[in-house]
Length: 293
Length: 300
Image (cartoon, rainbow over all chains, first blue to last red; front, side, top):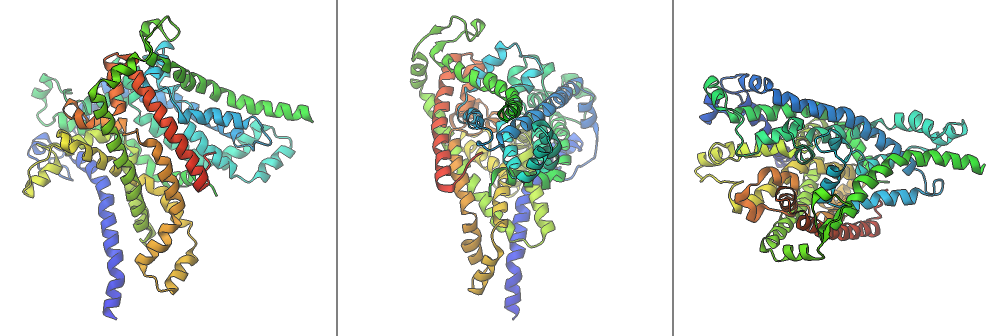
């Protein structure tokens, strides 16, 4: 009897512990960086900082937040979200709706779908795309960060699959009452697709927030860099020194390492605050969009 | 009646117009722009300018460069390992996560493992460079305190490949479990009941009920991942590598970037890009076709 109860609990406990440790490996590196960012550099140099700040200080953060370059880059990112998000969402919605119709009622659908699908199979690649943007005179303009990615084919497919699962009766009823396609879309499809749209909004905002490559190749002037492109020059370029010689003299308690850590934390915080609350939406949105019954 | 239907369809065409214009400009024109691969391209003259045609010279130049084969080999090794582990680990994680009874604990674990997916490789690159540093990184401090020699994970060509493979799987495994967990939820509970009546224990149920219940989605995702065999992960490698690890860490995408946009050898770079695009086209087409035939998968 006793061994039976033991055996019953052994697996769940071991399983729960191992998975717990695995999950913590996803969090621990960020916690460590967090601890470094809030610690005095003298403690960091000694290797004394692990998962909790030592000699707590905000000086790395005040140093970073006083930098004009940081706010400039932050402004560019906000600008690309402010223009890009509405544009991306509007395009996704008005493209997904006609493509969610049956080919029988909207015959050219097949052509449009294949025209779009082919761009997922074949791409010109980096060099021709760069040359195009250059030739359109979009280098150093915010439009280079917004327009080339304005239509996300993957998002359109996610949403059109979601639209197809909505009960047909509702849109047919609306049609009978004399509603046109635009009205049906905005009054019926959009309000009933909030889970999918929340998912796409999350993807789009995270996409713009995290984008760095387009900023690096299309922006020649560093003052036009979006946040992640700017951070790249600070964080991962080995030769780049963020602190200048006279900064060193004034500030003993910070270093390149603590200020880098502070910037990683600042750029992560908005995402960390948002995604747990949207979890139930994006899980549902992804599953409904990609697995069909 | 016909007129009404026509005008109704007109608004559908209008809705698609902006998307079609964007596709033509930013997808189809670059496809045509691939002719750069056959030119001695001078950007100042423009796409439609009087560029000098050189036939297959760019391809000859590439194929006689021995480093290109090294790059191809790195790409295949890194991408293949990422695909394999990127399938196996989320499947195992989903099966074991499904065994956890407390739904609050389960949700907490899920939230934690999604986290790295949402961070860019710029930030994660910065984090990894810090924690993996041989002199000051916490990982090597731990190794040293256990009596091991420090390892230069990102600076030693021997260690670079395993490091990028493992850290990429670490970033994405949580995200990839979403679809597997959904497939497990869809399994009919009565199957577990009858398995129990037949005397199947917990592990037997995991292997004989849960795993077969996921087989469709596993097959589908495995087939679709074939198309990624030349995608070794530009964002990650670009933010982690440096000249010292090119021999094991340089991949097609980083190679094209350096040759094209840094060294301004546009023709040869576009030639490598064209090679990759054509191989990808074939692989993706075959994989979609197989997914359609064997798993009845339709993308739209």
